Image (cartoon, rainbow, N blue to C red; front, side, top):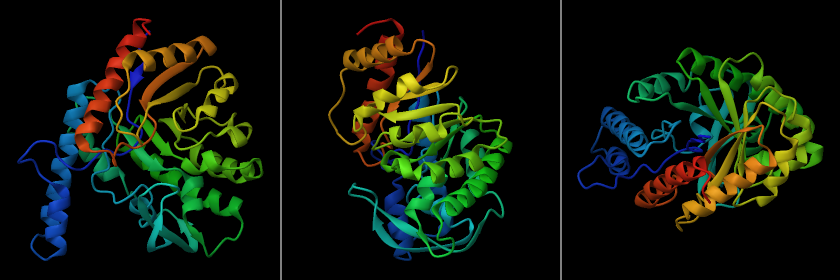
Length: 327
C-alpha cells in the first residue's frame, strides 16, 4: 500500500547551486537601499519555484509552497488580521529561532485574503496539487500577547473564526489540503482543552478542503479527547521529538489519516530508510484501518539546504520501502 509523502511546513530559502537566486542576499541589499521591493518579490517567486521543482523532482506526493516570503509561521498571517499589531522578537518555544510577537489590541477580524494570492501563484508553478499552510488558531493565540480578550477560550475562538475565513479563501484559490501548524497543542494541559477545542471548532466549520492538524515538538495527548470528534482529516505527529505520540494512534477515529513525523527536522543526521519503514510498519500494525502520510517532524527550514534535500530523498526512499513491506 502506497504511503503519501509530504512536507510539514517551510523549507530552506538558501540555494544549493551556485548562481541561483539567494533571497537572503537580495533582502539584505534592499535593506541597505541597493535593491527594490520588486526585486525582493522576484527573488521570492524564484525561490518558491526552486522549492517546488525540487519537491517534484524528488517525488514528494503532496508538496508545499515552502513559505519563501514568510519571516516566520505567525507574523505573515497575523499582520493581515484586524486587531493585531506586530511587536518585538521573542524566542520560538525552545528553539534557537525567533518570531515577532503579535499583540491583540482589538477584536480579531479577517478583512480579506492574506495567503490565497501567493498560494494561487505557487500552484501555477507545480505539476502536483500543493498543500496550503496556515498557523493554527490555538497556537497563534498562545504566541500572541492578549491585550483585548483576557479569556483564552474567547481569544482562541476569535482566531479560529478569522483563520477559518482565510482557509475558505485558500479553498477558492484551489487548495485541497491545508496544513494547520499547532505546536502549542503539544504543550497544552488537560485544562486547556476548552480553548483548544474552541479554536479548532471555529476554524474547521464548513470547509471542503482536507485539513492536517500538525503538532510538532510535542504530543497532543493531554487535549486529544477535546478535539477527537472534530472534522479534521489528519493529525500530524512528531514521533521523534515526542514519541509519546504513538499513544495517540489507538484513539484516532476510523477513516482519518495520521501524519507520521519520522524524519527529524531538528537534526542533520540522515535517517536509514529501513528504520523509517519499520516505524511505518509499526503504525500499520497498530491501526491498519487508518491512512498515513510520511513527513519530517517539523519545518525543515532551519537545516542546511543540502541536508534538507537529502532528508527529502530519504523520506521518499522510506515510503517506497514501506509500500513494499520492507523494514
